[in-house]
Image (cartoon, rainbow, N blue to C red; front, top):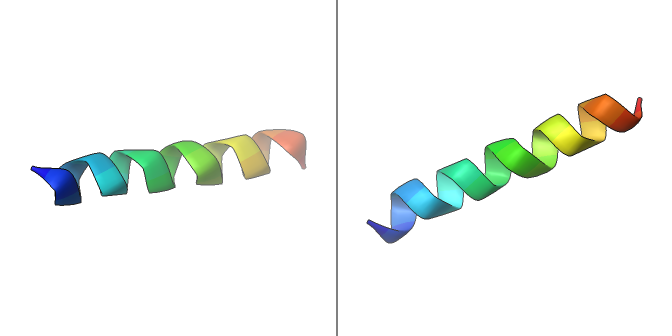
Length: 21
């Protein structure tokens, strides 16, 4: 589903931000 893809993308972006910090 699109919603699942959106959630995965959101988590990926969050992980990237945390990794930078």
